[in-house]
Amino acid sequence: MMMPVFAIVKKDMRAFLTSPMFYTLLGLCVLLWSIFFSIDMYNFIAESFRQSSGKAETGLNVHQNLISNYIVLVHYVLVFIIAAFTIKFFTEEKRVKTFSLLLSSPLASWQLVLAKLMVGACVLILLLAVSAVLPLSLGFFVH
Image (tube, rainbow, N blue to C red):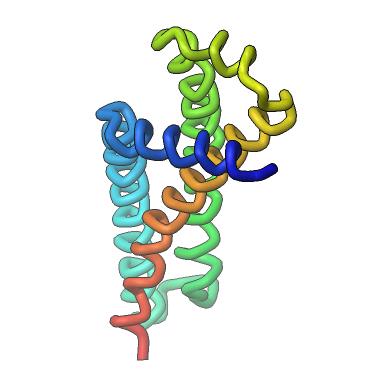
């Protein structure tokens, strides 16, 4: 019952991971996340120096100043990226002319939707894993 769903997931993931659009959007995400994380890191270090000289008004908190800002940024970027990927899932089927073939297959419509949803979830997990690299790298620098 689930084997056709997994076959579609496997086919779509293979097509997706060999697509230049995926790597372009992934690179754009990493570039945006890296730039803004670096800016937040620079601001945090500058505030740390101000605090050590007694000129800062508030205390520093790595979680509040770096991680939460980064998570908010990741969410904003993912809203647009997920929308782009979702559109690509179905337009790619129509472009290759396999959408009508999928609709006329012995699959139920819920199985087709479930397969596309699973591909989207796999791509989201992959993007979240890539976005976790920068905050996890802080563990090397914190005592």
